[in-house]
Amino acid sequence: MEVRELWTQPAWVPVVAGWLHEEWFRHAGLTVAELQEQFLPHGVGAPTLPRTFGGGIAGEVVGAFSLVETPDPESGLPALCLANLFVAPSQRGRGYGTRLCLEAAEEARRWHIPQLGLLTVSHAGFYEALGWQRRGRVPVVSRGVETEAIFMKLGVYI
Image (cartoon, rainbow, N blue to C red; front, side, top):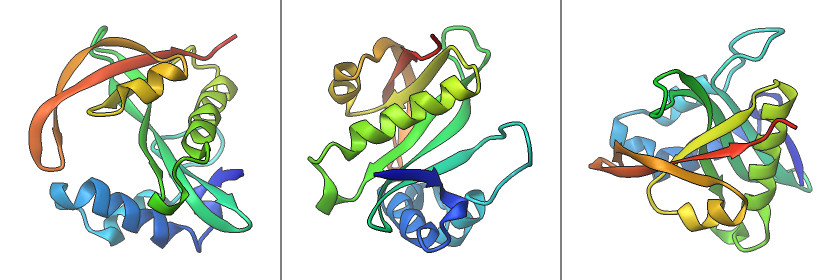
């Protein structure tokens, strides 16, 4: 799988925006067009956030993830977090989600970030199998419903 910043693959942008809109963001009132706008580069040089990446096989996008800044519930300080990990339903079970998580960790390493965080409502077991550790619970709104997410961290800087 090749992993690229989404804005460098224009044909992938509407596909990923559609996936994320349907999975999470329609409940938040965001349109597909607003999501596509978020995938454009926000700066040149030093990493800026948010950043969205797509993973492709033979030129077709099969999954995506974003890196965002979110307050760390333990310290209150800004933290780099994996967000919006998504693999197309027809492509699940092939290791693409794992590959995208590993790429997110590698991106954090390139930026010299010691830990990568994430919030998950329902997939903690998947992340734990990849070495993520549970660090607490955080109130969130997911798919339009108030609930709790598990905050997890992965040490990435070696």
